[in-house]
Image (cartoon, rainbow, N blue to C red; front, side, top):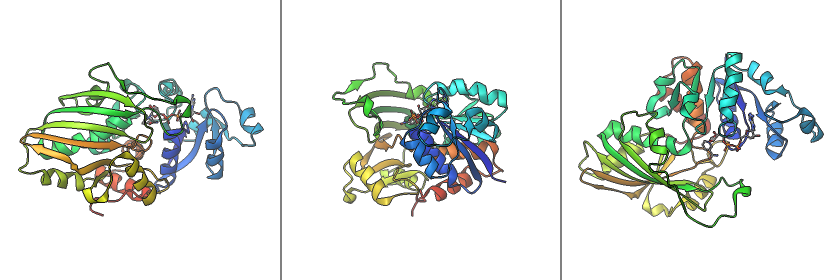
Length: 343
Ligand code: NAD
């Protein structure tokens, strides 16, 4: 029997997670919720996703737009084995009360504080920690990107200290209300919240992060400096590790991918899965250097989609059979069209 999954909140993350759930044979999407009718609600209807009314929304508002609704969020939660909460930041914490009283397990997003859940999750790093849990939080886009890389380098070479500067996109592409923007805004909180967030997954990792926001909507870019405890003789060994791990994409110099515009053009040309997204950590072979124990590398993170496969794996870890992390990741990625390592 497929696991019945509800997606509460059908915005930037929720609509991608809903499409991803619909593509997994062991999961069944029982519905999505929105607080008001708009083009996204119309797309949900056209895809045949039952639509439920969230938050302060009303059935009348949807019906006057010609959109049938199947009920309220309470009805949606009752119909599900598990809810993936994709509501705006901090709203998930409010919604948690409803899931708790209905006795339905829930996956939360990185906009919630870590104590909303029993465990913060990244599939490559701590899949087993979510096994059988009732409340799991998939960490934010930046933290997911960092956690994946930490998982690779820690297991391969050990990490004495990690320093990252996060160059953050100012808004998602559809968030026109947040612009126009012209400036570079340092986050004066040092360290930025990302380092402590990575430590919700790797409690003993020495990591310092700083961040700044720049006027772009495409992706984030991380500038990483990692002191390795057991450095390899050459950068090739590091590259091979990244290339052999799912959810990493390493560009070569001849491909002419100079930065995030070409990465997203590549994603559109490749048209992975249901959406032209880039769910992998993006690295550059020629943007990597090893000097003794010091590794330097850039990575780009597609903020709108990187957490999508992790949400699917979180559901399997919580309610699935006894799939291993590797088996779940393989199944998720195959159904989403994320290329296998070496493919
Ligand atoms: P969004 O604003 O694009 O979408 C939120 C959706 O929730 C909207 O469709 C809205 O109608 C709906 N909603 C409003 N009130 C609700 C309620 N009470 N209950 C349920 N749904 C409600 O937000 P988003 O960018 O998709 O962010 C969702 C979560 O994902 C946040 O925790 C955010 O921090 C996290 N996240 C966002 C990004 C990103 O880049 N956008 C990346 C990673 C994680």
